[in-house]
Image (tube, rainbow, N blue to C red; front, side, top):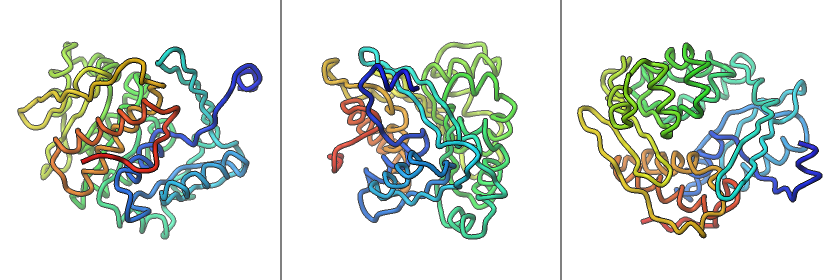
Length: 297
């Protein structure tokens, strides 16, 4: 990281996959402020202060578990052309503790107040017990629990943890690479993304009142959604190659846009449209940053 800072012109943005998605959802909704609550772990340091300040500026209700063992997590997003490569130093993000934060009465009350939950698959590497506590609460109270496959390595190396949570997942997000790895690891014996979505949708589920919905994005190709027996593909908004600044944060933005309509009880088609809109805005900006107000109708 020191070398990157020395050799290149570096821009700093507040990030974190789930935090990005919550911020985008809040940006899409605009008012009231603090519709989205975020839990995560930071260090007692300068970057931690920046994350707190940025969350405040975005009107996200962030409640961090602060510890001094590890520094606040950082991630270098290296942009080549219009694609990105990520190098993460997770630091404090690895230190979240259920008993030290999630279980505290004032925090759990916030969980109970919510009607939609979203956790990135990345968090499976940190605190499976925290995820399961929230997932079971959602399932028992017929609320919506959403998760993201996040990266191919999650389906590969954290398969057992992922499959412990899967029965509670009402909406699963992922991209084409993550979907392909998940299918291979699950022995689906197909590379067809619509088939993969269908098979994933029909995996065992705890809360029978809600059918699982599977949403797979494919960059500039259409977004695939499986629900019940039906699989549909929705075209994304066309964009000129020269308008793409970088694709960093596009997947998080899609989820944020989707969730912003979901919490307002809009149709799934509308949720996907909002996801496409948010992702289209994000790829025109550096990092997961956005203009002051959305222009989504």
